[in-house]
Image (cartoon, rainbow, N blue to C red; front, side, top):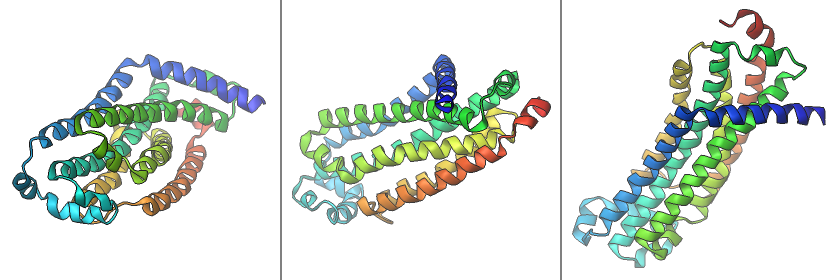
Length: 270
């Protein structure tokens, strides 16, 4: 019970500090809004598509590929097919948000306390490294995941309003829902772990975020790969990705606990 109470105290403190950091919160919310409005703007434009324009946009090949996963797609209009493609492809962008959110929050928290030396009084208390990182982790992951899920709900609502239920029913299928609901927390945990490891080795939050930003590259590869028809994600691929992320999260978080040297923080951080 002491472990839970001490971790909860850290969680409450960290949540308050993160929510009080207005530049961090506002910049993350602005990014969520941007990721929502860009595909919705495309959906509005698609409503004016003619079949010839859809063919010129390269939709035909992509539709044929996606029909393997969604057979009902073949009986829809070109505008509906284009809307489904855009909606599904841009849903992948929501996998970037938890990385940015968790990475930004963790590096801002750890490096910020590192620079202000405000973490030293906390380390002088009986709280253990695991309890400290557990409390910080919960606050960071909850902020990143809740913001991402909230943005996704807004995305769904606007897509439904613009394109109609027939499009959203096909676009937000089991694959898309599993991807956002299951992979988002796992990716946020990965961004958090990377933030802890990197922040323990650098003294500047910008440097930490730039280094950790490399985590976004595999997700960009997924987005580009699916949009170009290199591969098509299905429920099985999401399940394998989730398993891989769980193992990677455990490894990175374990490494984060190992590199978070309490003695070095107290004696050497400047």
